[in-house]
Length: 137
Image (tube, rainbow, N blue to C red; front, side):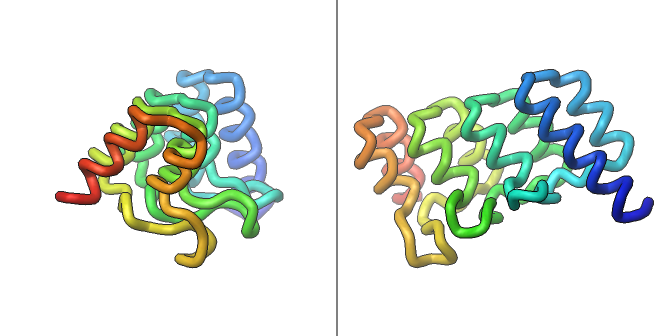
């Protein structure tokens, strides 16, 4: 598969996530879409699914090999777990933690906020409790 084809698959995967079209997400992954590939803005599929609170899509992407600890964006986004925590997407936080996301991993290559700090800062008590429990394990 050439670079142009990979970029098209990534663009289609991101569009499918925005529309919560799980059938298309699965089909694109089977067709060779990379679950870790960033779009032209640097956003990765797992980050987008975490922000959009798409637990089923998160599960599909993780099963396809998406890395839950890779940052998205070019310094303005962060990890999928920090995104889910910042938005209070507790079900996605649970899924990411079960699948190996590091609750202590700070965004901005270690210099930014942790998932717990985002949850607390934005008043998401359920998400904060999940992250506190995960940190003590």
